[in-house]
Length: 132
Image 1 (cartoon, rainbow, N blue to C red):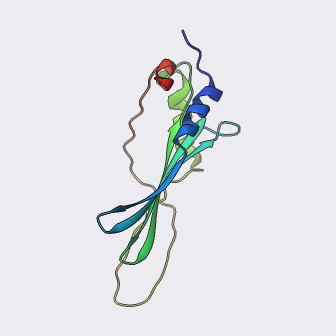
Image 2 (image 1 turned 135 degrees about the horizontal axis):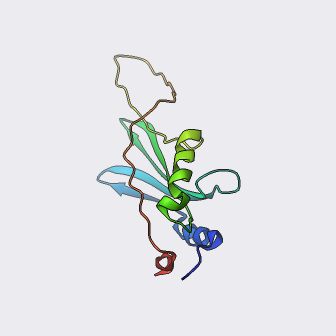
Image 3 (image 1 turned 180 degrees about the vertical axis):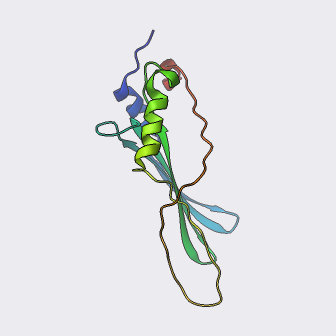
């Protein structure tokens, strides 16, 4: 049985380090995938940040979502779920969710940290599928 090797997992994750601009309809969009090795001092082992930027009503908006990636020999029940709970509880890697307000006049910006209900699907697969 192949061994779960964190270095191998991150090496494969680095293949997803991408950035590009494209036009969707008439809207220029910037998409960035950014792998981060997080396991030295935190959980989960790695993050794949998905960042999307575009202008809405001539105002810049950015959406950033961290996808947790765990290299765990025992799988979901063997430690990965515990690491996911640590990730959620520590609140170090927050989803960046934009909100746009159209008002009668003036510009303003407010940044807040809020609790947000989230549905999470945790997918497990064997390491042999990493490079297939």
